[in-house]
Length: 159
Image (cartoon, rainbow, N blue to C red):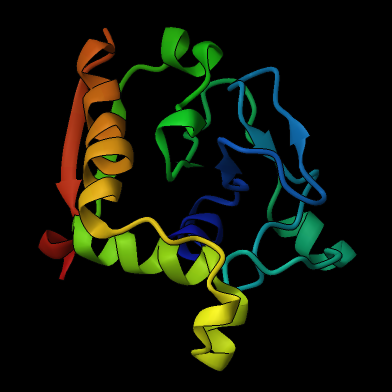
């Protein structure tokens, strides 16, 4: 639950590389962010759609100027926008074990299957080898051509 912790510590909302409910494009970063409020610290799912209270909006606001920014991005087509890539001082790239990332994406893309375990409800049937070669590896390689210095951290190293 890194995003909730980031927001609680910095007071700056996290952003996403892809559009989602309640998010608007940030001219500062080229990513999408809520107007305020962020992810409630007691949320069980960081993708929860919530209407922020005035208290949440007072505590967690959009980043401005040189505020640090955390942008969630899961897939190559969700690469960090050009505005951010041209103005960032450094990119902290947090890599998840590809097996764990695959499992998470599989569950996210197949909610009906996960609830029933009925193969008739399987909507996304990409196998791990396909995922690794067409999604995970291109995502990692995307940052090879970025001119901004990078710090790479593996989730497994943060224990």
